[in-house]
Length: 165
Image (cartoon, rainbow, N blue to C red; front, side, top):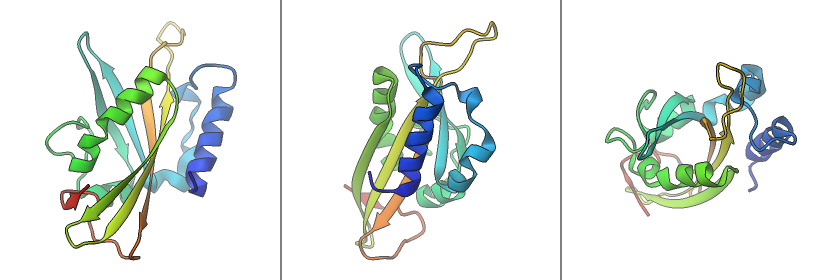
């Protein structure tokens, strides 16, 4: 991981966590993320007996631009979500299973031939129940996206529908 914002956010997550397994999402304040907000995406983790669903709670402006869709309120594996994000749902499941951060670089080729490196850091957060107890499961995942384009040009929906792997 070489992106300064991703490294800083990972270090910040680790400080929030302290000696706990997960930092509490309530300890995260808007000012803490202001510098990275346009590159962030927050997903709530909804649990049922048979599956986990990741619902987009917030998308920064650069995330919306990159994927070509405002996915707020939508499930990550839903039809309105970009192909690249649907394929990355397994990374979100890994974060929940391992209860630890996850970093991945995906090399994409846009239909116009531009090669883009899509770098994503996923950070798990827990939350407290109404009774004040910490939940053992991941409640929210904060994602910080970084894009590196080999040809120094970014088409609009760089990781949206016009990509191949």
